[in-house]
Structures are given as C-alpha cells and as structure tokens.
Image (cartoon, rainbow, N blue to C red):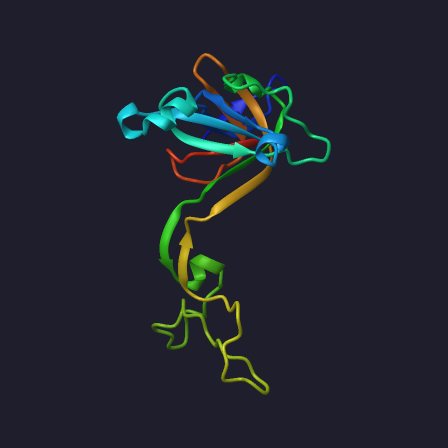
Length: 197
C-alpha cells in the first residue's frame, strides 16, 4: 500500500495492483453454448505446462482462465470480440470497482482473534482464562447442547473476500499499474479480480 495525493491535495490510502494484460479467448453465446459469457485468459506461463489443445484454444500459453457472465438485466456481450486485449486502459480515474481475492490465511486461531471476543478480566487470580471462549452451552430445555453456528476457535482466513465501492485513484498504462483507494484482500502476489461496480 501507499498514499496518493489528488489535485486538491487530499491524500488517499491506496493499494498498488499490477494488471497483467489478458486476451478474450472465447465469447460464449446463448445459441451455441446455452448461456452468454466472456472467457478471459491472463498470466503468461510456459507452453510445456499446457496441453496442445489448451494452447490452441487460448491462442497462447496462459496460466489463468476466467469466465464472466453478464450480471445486469439488459447487459450484453455482442461488442466483445475474440482475441481482443484486456488491459489496464479499461479503467479510468474515479471509476467505482468491486475487488475479490482470497484473503490471508491465518491458520487455527482462538475466539479473540477470530471473532473479536473481549476475553476475561486479567485480575483477581485469573491465570489462564483471559482468552478462553467462556460458556458454549445454552440454558433452558436443551442446555446440554451446543447450538449450530456457535462462534468458536477454528481455521481463520483463506476465504474468498469481496470488497465493494472502491475508487480508482490512478492508472499507469506504461507500467500496467492500477491504484485503488483503500485495502484489498490477500497477501502480496495474490491474484485479484477487479470488476466494474
């Protein structure tokens, strides 16, 4: 992350994303495929890691293939052509985008870190129970049962996280860089999906 100043001198916290140029490898139609979608290939890789059929279909050796369907009513993909480039030029300063990625994995964590429990008082003889979850059984008729969805310790992170309404603060086509205001899920090197809001 970094910070960016606009013309008025207002500072924005920003995340720098490197946008790998991709190509439209296939345009699916309702008549031929049963649904409308655009298939985009990105991320260069070695040709020996792919089958000849994949290389022929994609028009080159690409590490990632992703498919996008029209999301809004009336949205069409007729204007998209196979082989057209997908670059950082598609975005402009001020655009509102939605960003999705796999969040940082944090392993097995307790309830304080995972769910934000406050923990117990650290006084009056408390020695080992400050970060303990406390009671997990309910009272009443079935008090001996732990109800479904009880917040407890467990694996944290490594989930697909979507952050909406982020603003594009800078676009650098020469370096294929995109600066987005605010934080983006994932660690450095995570593959991030950027969609127009």
